[in-house]
Length: 150
Image 1 (cartoon, helix red, strand yellow):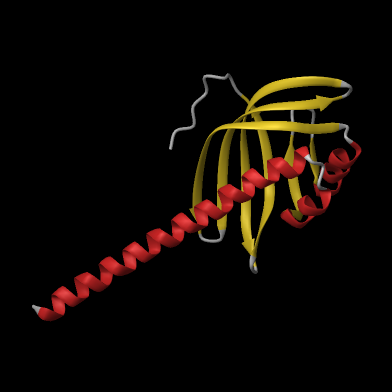
Image 2 (image 1 turned 180 degrees about the horizontal axis):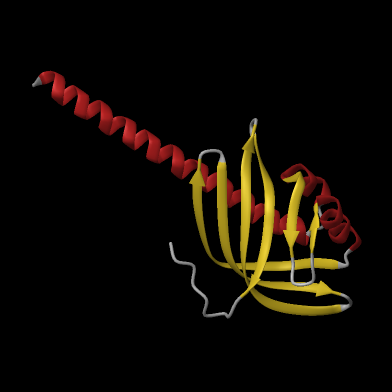
């Protein structure tokens, strides 16, 4: 009986510890996603270059390209991500991979014009050694009533 109680307590402790780690990981990745939007607004390509995997893909309304092109677009200002208003977020962690969904209103300067669009943005991150790297970022055009189901 005593052995059973100790086993149950141990398993409960392990489950709570596992949940706390997941929550910490989720918070870490969500904060990184939030920071990314600010770095994009600030045109901070140095921070973004650290975050983006060298082979990352970026899917926009006008095309798909890789990290070097995305960094050049941000640096040159041909797309200036002025502000991303995040309305809702969801995250799923599987091993060393995290997927983040953000429903945003993006205010951007594109081809000489200020525009505002509603998107759900899907971001894929992978833990590589001690740092999270973004592998993919995809903009999906949605209505402002769109909801992310968790």
